[in-house]
Image 1 (cartoon, rainbow over the protein chains, first blue to last red):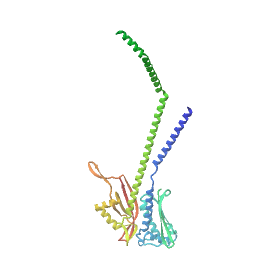
Image 2 (cartoon, rainbow over the protein chains, first blue to last red):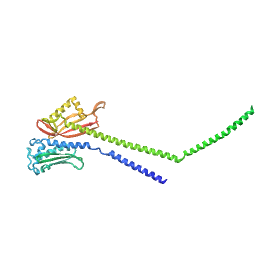
Image 3 (cartoon, helix red, strand yellow):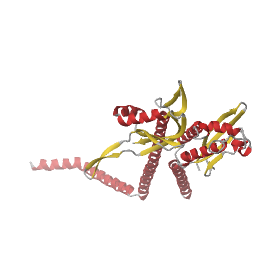
Amino acid sequence: MSNRGQVEIFGLVIIVILLAIGLLFTIVILTKTPTREVARVKESVQAANFLNTMMGTTSTSCNKRSVRELLQNCATASQEWVGAALCEDGHNTCELADIMITSMLQETLGKWGKNYRFNITGTDAVEEIQIERGPCTGEREGSSRPEKVRAGLDMVLTLHICQS
Amino acid sequence: MHAPQVKGAAVWDSIFSPLASEGEKKIDLCTAKARRSTKIRQNPRGQIKMFETIGVLIVFFFLLFTGSIFYFAAQKSALQKEKVKAGEQYAFQIVLKSLYLPELDCSFLQTQKDNCIDRIKMEKMSQLIAKNETVRTDYYTEFGYATITVEEAFPGNQTWKLYENIPTKLEKIKGEEVEVPDYIDKLVTQSPILIFEPWKDAYAFGVMEVNVYVQ
């Protein structure tokens, strides 16, 4: 009789364990955060569109040069933007490109409350243009865009939209 | 007459009395069985077995009920997620449609510039949609319930409303029928876009904002 009782208690314990596991799974499924697939695609397209749009935007000074032309000129300068062409308003092409990109980023991603990292690689002068807002430690979506400066010289623009 | 009567009674007794005693015996046996069966029903072990079975059934149905509640809750949550995802995809489709509208593109000698809208074309189109009901109905098939605005972010800060169609319903407020917005959610998507200014031959940096209303 005592043996049978032990078996029954054992069965009961197994049932309780199974129930607990089931409950745990249910809680995990119910509290699972929604997937960010569409949001990821959206942010990636946003970053690509931003780079494309930004490069085509024309400046109000500097003979209506576009950001692309400003950066192409800036890329040929040496460190600390020495050698970059000077515009009518007193800024050189690197400074003007920096001002324009900063303003565009602030008016868009900044206004939408998103943190970002923008940087250019290729030459010393353009690598000095680095714009960022807030921390960027977690997940991020972004886009890179190669641009020709002249034959044999390229620069790559990268924009990351951060989650935190 | 009397004698044969007595004789008849004796015969009757001789035939039926053994049978009667047998019947009594049978009745006695039935009573005994009935007593015994009553004893079986009142057996406490049997009662315990029955309660045990009822208990098992109660626990089984309780578990079934609890399990089904959790299952349906999970199903509902999954459906909700699917609905949100479908809504987001639909909103993104509308964004892409509005970004590549042939009516607004910047074309030069049959070549189109990517991610660019012509400011003059945009102004004319927004005026046309705002004034003409037929045109608005035509674009409804493309955009559905949505609001599309274009905002210049650099160097200026002008805004144009390209298309607006907010779902509404009539509601009685203080006895008067008033049109109120009828949507449960609004999905907002912004996308940078070039605004070409033909008379200046310049490109401004703009943002196209698409609000899609989910009913």
